[in-house]
Image: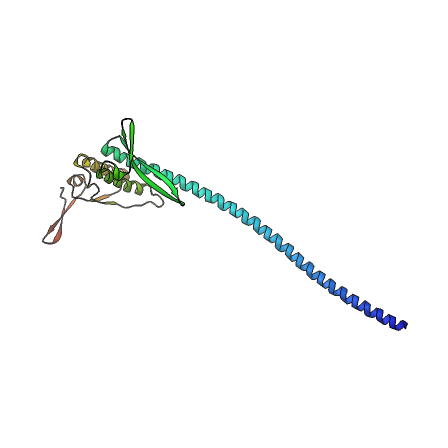
Length: 227
């Protein structure tokens, strides 16, 4: 009987030891998973902190880009306004000036152009096409071309300015001043200006001129002729 009890006890102890071994193995397995999870959480926390730093840096850079863009845009606006205003005043008188209004719409910058004339105590502000007929539009358009070319410095735009009938709506009263201003632009910026025109005043101030005539269905170029 004692032998039977010992055998039963040994059997039960074996079962308990096996169960303990299984539980130890499961514990070690769970402990290993816990350690892995802790390591993963720590890594994710580090990644999150690094991402936050990068996000903050990108936000700072983005703000800097916006501020730089705004500054550059404002500088360009002032340069263009100044040149166009000088052109308008040279041709039409000191009562005229040129203004650009910049607006933001859906993340894009938009520009509206205005010709301003001072009439005594009154200030009249119109878009170029509504101001004093086509002559103003021609002068503003011509000045804007030059101003945009000269204000664009990244990269600079080199080469001549080619104009086709740049002052066809400017009256005889003001055309001589337009030609003189073109001559000043040539000297001021050192940029060659090539003009195609029927107006003799523009040809007379040129350093070199060519007349193109149609003879018997063919164009004939005559060198050195001032109209």
